[in-house]
Image (cartoon, rainbow over all chains, first blue to last red; front, top):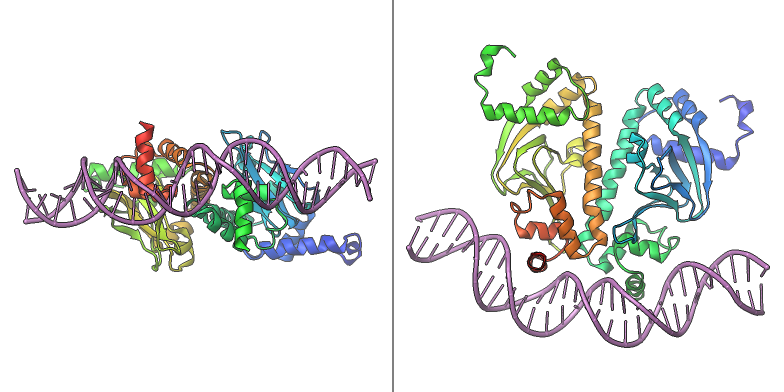
Length: 205
Length: 205
DNA sequence: ATCATTATTTGCCAAATGGCAAATGATAGT
DNA sequence: ACTATCATTTGCCATTTGGCAAATAATGAT
């Protein structure tokens, strides 16, 4: 990227890109040219609290990276209750994989829990990156496998714990998020009622 | 494979291999030569009920494909309770991914719930397949991603359901396995006590 | 067939959690 | 500062689930 062009990027934008590459480079190597090509496809996206990144009934058309804020993935179960499947916080990739990969309608909402700043790639650009950058698919596969394993390791153990233990585990995993996520969302993530979670909080102190 | 050699394979062995390739070919294409190469690395393994396929504290050194029987993956939580994380039944790949990929000690046991027949690949052979067969890594990635997504989709929703609903969902997913898995394992998978599950079974009829 | 062992069911009661509604607290808009 | 709105806490009681122990059933070995 020629020096003369730098001026048009804000400090915040550069910091966000740096966070993105810090994240990516944990999973594999890229040269300067490849990184510039990725950067050339990146757009920024601001999501206000409660806005949707992708929606049930629609096809997910972008891949995102959260630089600020927290998203959650949720759905409605057959009793009509809204269930939070998981939270995704800063410096993580967000994509409704099933929907994005297969171009089928999603059954889940991906929603901003707080105001969010993201870097996003359109489906078209993302596929171009996959076709152009040698080794990019391997990096993406690693990122996605790790994210999936993390989801399994985080939510699934809750099944065998009582409500208090669930909340304690939650606080361990998302210490900085606990105070930014409404109680109702945490309760639905943990599979307890709001009032129970409120009482659990009281008892912990 | 020359005709003269066929005689040394039993009917059962051939059926097992066919099941393996039926499974693999759902995720990508392979030519005859590639399939023969894979087959040349395959060994059969019989596990008796309660035997371990891989163990906590050890490094997982093989990839398996179940042709008959059911395995379970379990661990001990910090209260010392044995928790079944999931079951894996016929026509599925089994590998303790974290341990196998990174050559680190596992924290989980993979144990036969019933007598099992499997096709297995040693770590060495598996890596050779990855290096030799073009496109094999892509197929493996797809298989593994799907398996991980399935785990997320199966166990994680249990968090938000009551005990009876958990069991009903379990029966939907593993209809043919319900009667082959001891109640205690199912109970620990569902996060309920044995006695509760026993009562739930009674009430359902 | 018999016994020993293990798995499952059942009874009894305690503890945890849910359901509902009201009270309190927090927040944003005017 | 004052509402209106939404989020959280609390009280009361019902329901679900757990803990423990004993009874029954199933299984495998001799």
